[in-house]
Amino acid sequence: MKKQKRLYLALAMLLVFFLGGCSFETNSTDATNPSNAMKVHYIDTGESDSILIESEGHYMLIDAGDVDDKATVVNYLKEQKVEKLDYLILTHPHADHIGAASEVVNTFSISKILMSPKTNNTKVFETLLDTIAKKNLKITKPVVGDSYTIGNAKFTILAPNSMDYGSNLNNYSIGLRLVNGDNSFLFIGDSETEAIADILANKQTLDSDVLLCGHHGSKTSTTADLLKAVTPTYAVISVGDNSYGHPSDSTLSLLKKNNIKTYRTDENGTIIATSTGSEITFSAKATDLSNSNTSDSIKDDTTSSKSNVVYITDSGNKYHKSGCSYLKNNKTKTTVEKAKKAGYEPCKVCKPAS
Image 1 (cartoon, rainbow, N blue to C red):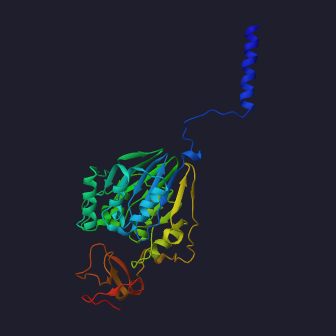
Image 2 (cartoon, one colour):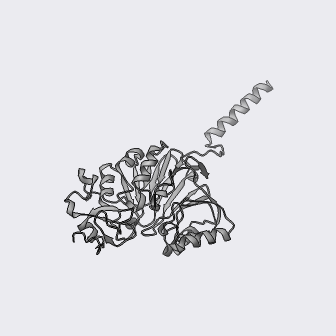
Image 3 (cartoon, rainbow, N blue to C red):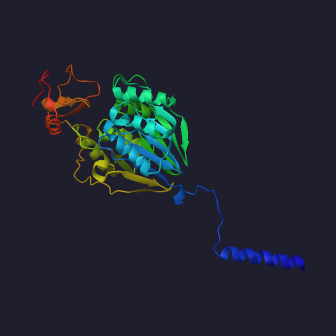
């Protein structure tokens, strides 16, 4: 009889427990739990890159904007209550990616710094190395295939895959794929055609929900083959006022042709993507790509005539004929009209069409 009473009592307690709506506390990383959400902040630094990732109170910064972005980057991190960075990743040693890095190193505690193995002889780069040394921090060389964790998320290094890209620093960019549950984000720095081909050939998993278009939307960094491998639902372009024609018409056309929802920092300001592990939402409205040209001519923006084809570089303000002695390795093909519209002037040495 006592056993029956105890049994009835136990059943009654269970019934009350479940009918009363009680629930068990759990440490589960259920993707639908907002507390487990990962946020990717594409900070509006103009014509430069700086991305803050936060997951479970852990933080990672990919690139640090340009020299004049010091206050923007540092203040934004402080507003997000960042005190310590688990990772500082500097994709390559161009000023528009490492410009404010010294200020970041001086301001925040940093556990690990990953930098492109390619160096630069600029004052900005040398100052950064001095700052890191004074803080007794070490630089970790990125190794393709290595994975790291940040909160509930993890990321895997995809690039660089070679040290034989010549003087084009963009191709030595660190590339990585960030995963939170079933959501994924791809970052390729300023990698251009040659480096992208190596990323594709390396057979790492590239399929991602969100692609940060490389090199501020340059045509050499968002290729048809890359989009085919990544199959992104969303794309983000970090870009500001510039004389390079970023983002390129061909990039915008490819994004439209592939029905990829696109967000731009020059239109939206800072963009925040929130990942629950099962879905991704954005803080901004997608840009209107309806005016982008989607004809097959996006394979080459310069189909008008050979005499109209010229070349520009990222660092110069002139446009050139092919073979000009002043033309650097990281040349971009364009037309006279587009070069002039972007603020370029004809080279006085090779004297291209004007």
